[in-house]
Amino acid sequence: MKSIPNIISILRILLSLILLFLKPFNLLFFIVYSICGFSDIIDGYIARKTNSASGLGAILDSIADIVFMGAVIVAILPTIFVPMRIFIWIILIAFVRIVSLLVAYCKYHTLAILHTYANKATGFLLFCYPYLYNTVDISILWCLICTVATLSAIEELIIHITSKELSRNVIGIFIHKRSI
Image (cartoon, rainbow, N blue to C red):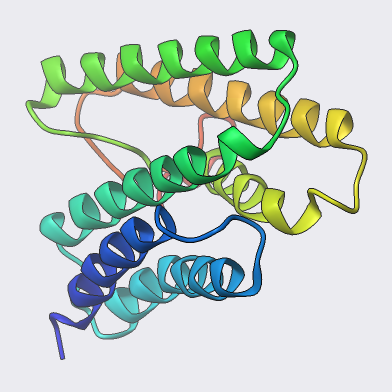
């Protein structure tokens, strides 16, 4: 029972890779995509409810998130138009994320992606993107996602720079309760 959250994270990795072979925005793509999104919610929930949260589980969840987002980007990006200003903005966000990972690695000697509310909001908006692609003004959607992603990347970097020890479940720098 205690390994179920880790198994779910591993399944998300495998399903994410399957997305690379599916046609974006068709029914099968959305089914697999939705299962990946649901698994991202349920693995942490099960880990907390069964008291089986672990360092390995947190790392697996982060890796699964990276593989999922990477697979979605590789699958969807060739089929959509990304304005140059948004593309540059995304590169700048990625740069801040990489600096944050390097700071965390130098301080804690491990891969450290935090589960802040801002990171969760970014993930949620990114997850919603394919569902909203044909229904919402895409330039507004891009700006909203990039704004939240920028704030979350900067917040995570500040947390890594100012923290004395690693706490993956810190909820943010402006919230008095420090962990979830």
